[in-house]
Amino acid sequence: MRKNRKIIAIALALVSVLSVGALGIAPAQANEPARHVTVTGVGSVSVVPDAVRFYPSVTALASKSAEALATASRTATAVRNVLKAEGIAAKDIKSSNLSVYPEYNYTQDKGSEIIGYRATQSFNVVIRKAENAGRIVEAVVNAGNENVQINGIVPFVTKGSAAMEDARAAAVADAKSRAASYAKLLGTSLGKVVYLQENSAPSYNFPMLGVAKAEDGSTPIIDLGEEELSVSITVRWALN
Image 1 (cartoon, rainbow, N blue to C red):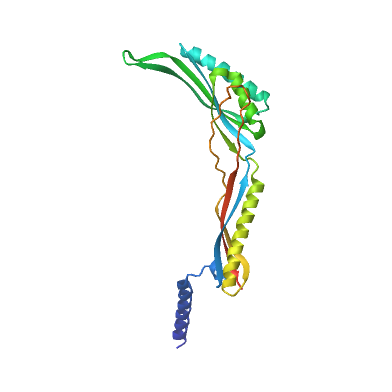
Image 2 (image 1 turned 180 degrees about the vertical axis):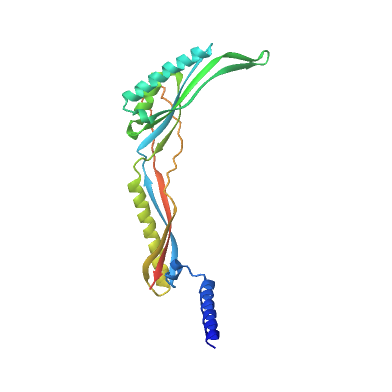
């Protein structure tokens, strides 16, 4: 009889364990309030870029590839020197391309003919003080004359931490306002926050702009504009 009771007790214990497992309640979920409200909040701020990235390149055409490369190299050295004179650090001057290739001219009578060899070296340059960008672009163009091209510029933000905090604060305020509105409609109030997730990290998207030196020799103006930074979050509050 005692043996049968022992078997029955073990069986009941197994049933109890299986019943809890069937509910699928994870420890974190078990502590979650039964009554809650989940909302999404969005915060946006406008930011003026404080730096500019620009893409100059030097190019030279000659009858021989070695001559073209030598001319392009001399121009590239002049560009580097003027960038350093303008206070651009070596870490902010990076070569992005170096090429030498034959250049052709096509005519209906003769077809394609090699007219020389073109050497090109391109740079990725960071100007960390946006207000100096126009003057530096002008200096680069003057240093290389006809052998320099400016392929585009991109304003960007280097000191965006404060703006990110402002965007997150705005997103939290937006979420809290929505949640409080629902709680009021339901005849209750908000309790503590039980969950928060940032759905989209702050990002800056600036258009690439072309720049050309003015014909009258005046310094080009770089229009920085401003960009909107947005953050989206999902927040869950317990309801009282």
